[in-house]
Image 1 (cartoon, one colour):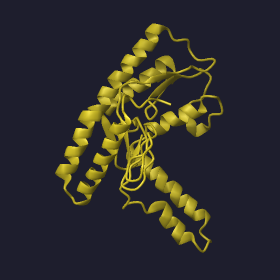
Image 2: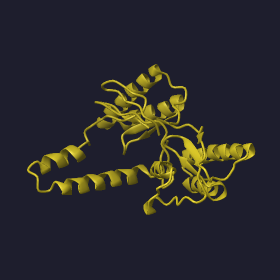
Image 3: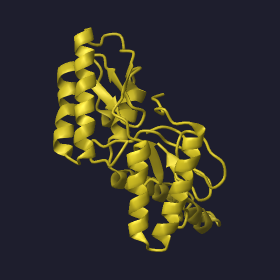
Image 4: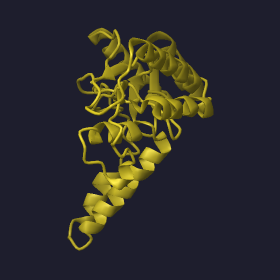
Length: 237
């Protein structure tokens, strides 16, 4: 799903290497060097880094249209072009951290075209008109997966980390009576010293494996290309 832009395997290797260098600089509290590496990666490869989730992704303004579901509004070529332009405009606002304007575009696309946006996989889809897109109410249609992916992709990194920690706590409670409860809890939550970041392209040890996701997130925020990490690596989103 989505796309990785024009990254080559050498590009991914270079990004993973620089991510490891950035981690070492932050560990040594050399924040000027760490920030310089971050800025260089963004300027060179459009890399966005999510330190909360330990992921990096290519922050592209190109979104792929997913085939609409039966019962969805019929979009003309002009409609699709307008949606694509609005998504580019929204991306610019997000890069500028003008999240209020970015959210307004997202909400307008939903209201006018019943379109939802998946920032992680860089996709958009026109949903069926009779679909309840409130994931908290439970969606059982063919659009359910896209709705959930879309809403998850637009969580802020902080909120996603909070939800992950809440899940770990709840999972630990299930095994509260087990002898190995303490060990399990540590294995699920103690990753502060892990310098790996996940991607969605694939990688070797000390690299950022790749998957797919966008940049800094608020309630509508993004992720672009995700990798699964190994030692000294970030995942690609």
